[in-house]
Length: 173
Image (cartoon, rainbow, N blue to C red; front, side, top):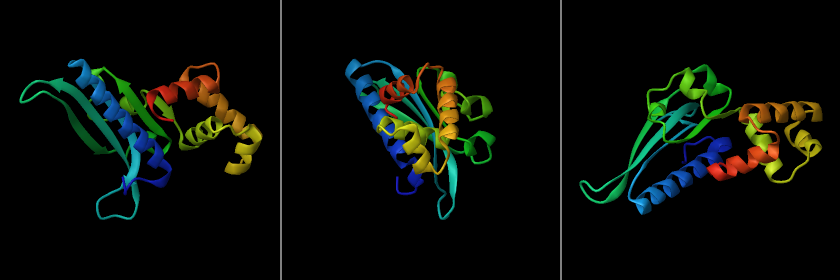
């Protein structure tokens, strides 16, 4: 976590918390699997520059070698992918096809918001108005409204309130 980009720290922390709660649910049920996939900017080992990494967790219950919930965590440098500089990817579900070497299709699946869009969502969730967000981000209210429309379209929802509720349920807000 100390190498995570400051702008991604909250989202990274929330994804880790979600991973732990999902693992706990699977253990209590004594059955099931879940895949969590998220990209986060972090420092490469020995570097001062940030790169994009895809964290993929495969969580499953097993009685062998002892009763527990297990995690297979794969971290891949995705800096070379076009999508990685434009936003973030987040997926939680049961589709085993998601747990694979990353490609453009994988990185554009799940929720995909730019860093600016996600920051706007966070500010909306905190109760800021469009005008206040525009001031905080040094953008015009028209630009903020364009971002809000893009957020709604990408999420397939009818309002930013629905997007916020979904992100909260997923553990991202």
